[in-house]
Length: 297
Image 1 (spheres, rainbow, N blue to C red):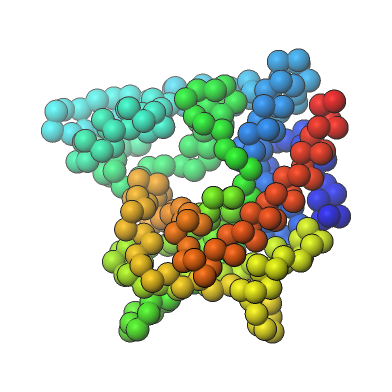
Image 2: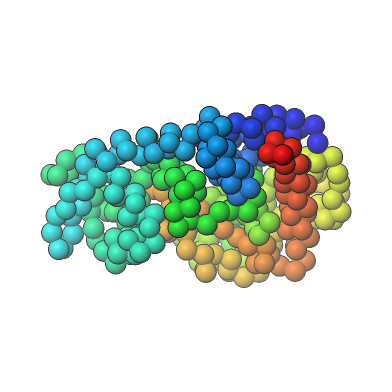
């Protein structure tokens, strides 16, 4: 697994926003927030005064948002609050229900109390880097946010095709792999609606570096790819609507929709694809765990 040669430096000193490329194929990476074992080690190092990726760095960044005003308007009246409170409203499940689910007609302005306004529920006000800081703060301080099992970030091109339909295929991406499933992204509300209303869809995706990333060959990948000359893509045929139970609207930013597809929703004949992904993740996490154990020994 020579492609993981730089992982030791990253685990020893993870930076706030930086990820580490896992394989020679740049489509696969790891960020510290996606591995609970590394988060625990970071907190331990911080308590011992050994961490250069200081937890205080996150807090200092967040403090600046307490000075930035935002304005909310709904049928009950107007309210001035701060950018800090706004993101806390969104990330706290109880407050999120009150502000983002119940008051769907609430308007927000980031500029001035007189506007311009946008719908709070549209999520167009979200800055992903700011949002990540609030997530990181909770991960590092155990603030009502569960730690994640090991998962890999990806940038794999994907395409959704409709069975027996004149609709054009929808382009997307697989943005994350975990033992439980895949996270996909779709651009555009129209595309999302087409997918959410279609019962039979095929997902084709590049898998590239996964085929040889760990130095091992996986029978499941060989079976599903078959005699494909390029040997870089897989195709999954879903004969039922895989999106009908997935709430993507609450996790969208503007016109980008993120949907998690569990391997449990894969048809039985394609379960081997999920198993192959799980094998790769086990191999990578195993190598990373060996490195981490040596560093904290």
